Image (cartoon, rainbow, N blue to C red; front, side, top):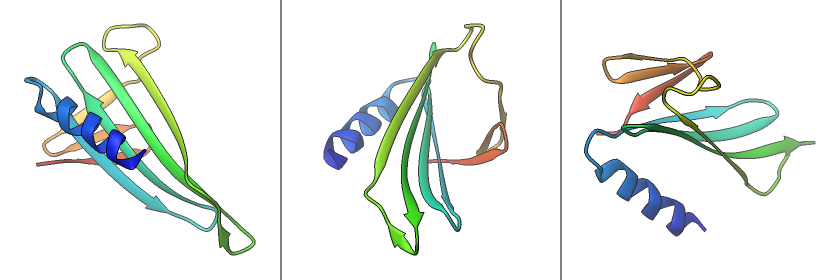
Length: 95
């Protein structure tokens, strides 16, 4: 599964006009790795997270959300240099 996600991210990043941003967050109750891919007409947010319960890390779970860039339900993303801001999350651009 990890190889498939890596290959998909690699090809998405290679497209012209695409940008890829990542975020890693750890807290008391979860560990999360997010990838935000901005293509010409599509925004893809891939999330992998592990819940932490009673000091034990549970198996990784995944979610994928995608929006058209100009659709009414698309999130507002602010891009400032090598960072993208989605809600309260700061993503760093992959070189």
